[in-house]
Amino acid sequence: MAKPLKLAVAGAGGRMGRMLMRAVLAHPECQLVAAIDQPGSDVQGADAGMLAGVASVGLAVDSNPAKAIDLADGLLDFTVPEGSVALAKETAKRGAVHIVGTTGFSSEQERRFEKVATGARIVKEGNFSLGINLLCALTTAVAERLGPDYDIEVIETHHRHKIDAPSGTALMLGEAAASGRGIDFSKYSVRERSGFTGPRTEGAIGFSSIRAGEVIGEHRVMFGGATELLELKHVVSDRSLYADGALRAALWARDQAPGLYTMSDVLGL
Image 1 (cartoon, rainbow, N blue to C red):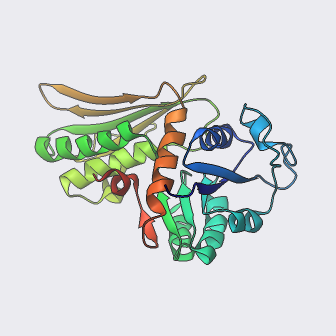
Image 2: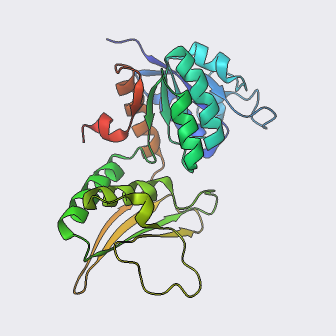
């Protein structure tokens, strides 16, 4: 039997960080060896197990990513774009596994991330759900078969605390649709509509973002034709599915060569 995969969690004080720590502590093939958060955060020095909502594990939250990654085989990183870029420098130096669920990267941050991340075994994805990744595959297939006569809208709903829009998952779905049509996503993506917009641009892939209450996540891809409407939908009922997918990705990545991967690689899609 393989040794447990030693993991560090970034953003330990956040909602997702606590969920990730809980998942690692419960997984028989994984071991939590470090937890980090921003210097000065109110969770510094707190017991990671207590933050995760389980028993004390005698592991205090720290603010030193280099120290944490030295202890670990891999890092679970659902933080912010600038933070993920900085963390990628550290994982690349050590050839570590780096699971990145951070969303909201600008084009410049994406380029910086890819530049500094060489050497790490990275799985970077906007959503680690099995269902969402299957939905992306279906979106590509439907977009290819229906063709440009059908309008495409991606509609996403999230909790009021989410800081980026459209969501990373919505963008994944838009890119999947563009791939099915064989078009450049950046040229056909429409993310804002306000005022006198005129008629819909032919071939546009539109986005609508809703932020309300405590909705974990809902995504719909709508294909609108002249005589029919087809809709694909995914609803999250428990945030733990993201953590489960992240651990699946980490266990897969430890046996891979350095490189940048997605959940489609992990799932063989």
